Image (cartoon, rainbow, N blue to C red; front, top):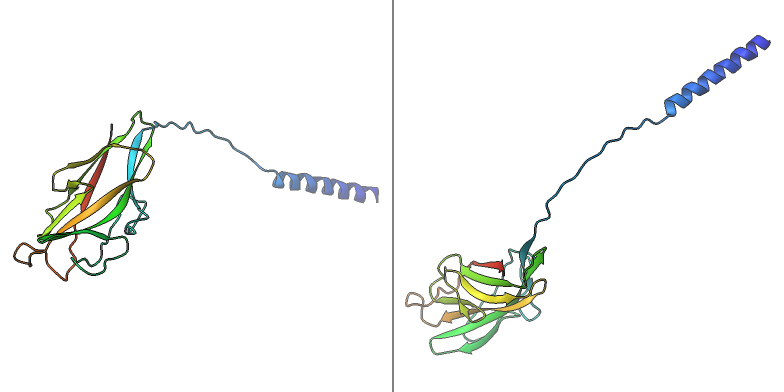
Length: 185
């Protein structure tokens, strides 16, 4: 009987050792040496201004602005104003914000320029603040403050002349792309 107990105890001990070996966790280790070059830079985003039209894709560098239907008389979309109605033209305008975000630069401010991507539709003149836009780069601001919304006015002068006589087409959307560029000073 002692021999049976001894064999059973030996079998139990071997079984326990094998179980411990099966459940033991194996590990391995490694090292990554990470290298980077911290690069300074700026980015430009458009934000909706509380007094202006809500921008599509506000907070991005590719926003859209819809002035809606405009005319010399009658109601305008929210955020659009008509400061001037003259004999030959009228002006509609809205506010928008530009934020230039800076990181790692030794630059006190930035210069903002803008230009039309293509010639404006007939009968329309675009301006940002007091600067009339063309397809050439126009300086809008020379000392823009970083990391804050800076308010600007998009102004559209619309000719009152009839279509075909120097006035814009009526009843169809007229679109224009304005490209902005911020350069650190």
